[in-house]
Image (cartoon, rainbow, N blue to C red; front, side, top):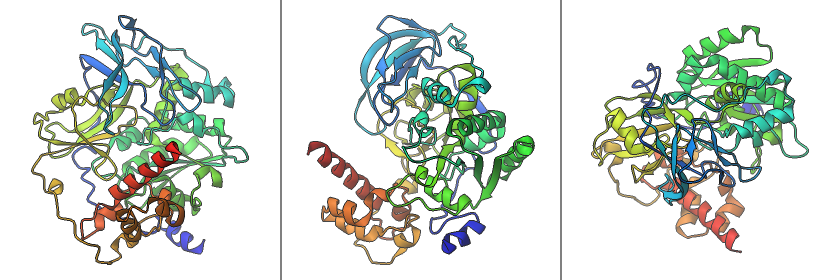
Length: 450
């Protein structure tokens, strides 16, 4: 614990890397609304857990904000109409960022409509019980907006025998290019604080602490000013380092605690939420609205008009690219950040709840050029970079030998959260993160088939 406290004094964690952040394009640009696409494609599985179940039928008119699919179980969330229009198809298979096509509801937008939200059920959150708040969060269709897309209401109910004492609020946004959380902290501070209070009430936590990387000190200042009359909530600047925004790393930096191997933050009495998630909760739950849009950073050398855009859920990437001035279909699109995001193969892929950014590279960008893979030279750079203290070199050798079960059972493969640090520093250009992703996928399929 003394080792961890040394790093905590510097508000950081052991290991990690310092990639160029490339945030200057959009960090100073306020949030702007994106126009509504002629057709919206709302996937039924935009979150961890069971897909949502449709409530509408082809030919049905819907108003913006209306529930169009119900939760498919407790670990699931409903979907809401991102536009006023007419349902044209159900279970239409549309491409996803992960590759396989996924069922979606297709809505044709009424071009002449004002697109005002026409469905809401206002609530007095001060009078609501913790149980009612949990239900309201699920009804809002809220998931983690930092990328994981885990249903937010599930985090409000820790496993049996555990309790939440501290809410950690993640405002780090350590991925290069992305600045949507930064803008949310600056422009939606009151919503953020209201969302934090709601989560503290629902979990029974007595304390909340907001961690913001020290390249966003303007956000720290704005939040700190708002917290003068808010006991129990603090904001701290942490070192700018990747992956500072990973929940285990941020817990170490702020609290000096370590989540045990194979464990979750609730095991040490902590719940972690992204600032974008809490700002949406603070806005939607009191109004009784559903999640129908989110802030997305669109940036990169292949974009003529980069910015932080308020994008309706279900907007096709092709329409988004037209609006931001990315005309070449040869451009490479990364959904999410360049470190943990996924390359997108089709412009028909829609923006979903978990999409925090779209980074566009021109096809001849140096970072996209295929580099030859060489044998591991045992330099140890990946060990020095791994924030979880794994041995990526050894895991890579086991992956090459297809010893996937050994990687999991003996070398903590599942503790890897695929941050990409090892691949980034490897002088032999070994795609270690991709190897680990494949190994985990094969182990999951093997267990499912057993």
